[in-house]
Amino acid sequence: MRWCGTSPEFKLAGVPKGTASFDLKMVDLNVPNYPHGGGKAAYQAGKNIIPCNTISAGWGYNPPSPPSGEVHTYRWTIRALDAKGGVLGEAVTQRKFPE
Image 1 (cartoon, rainbow, N blue to C red):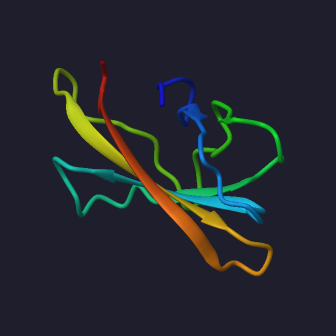
Image 2: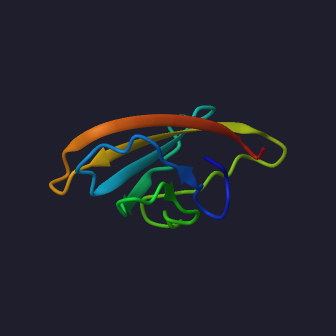
């Protein structure tokens, strides 16, 4: 993953067969109760990336915004979902922001 725009870019590997979409959630490990939320992204078979800005800031997602001069660690949980919303797999990644 790399930070860019309002939501990061994710490189994908080992996407489960039957994946239709991804559910993405972000948690600030420094302030875990802050409601950053997340969003959904459609899966395009054969594509190995969730592009920058796939999740828009607004209802349901608040981008990283640590206080000026502070660096926070953000953890993303990404769940692969089938067409009915069933969970096929899950991955977790984290990075500091700003880097």
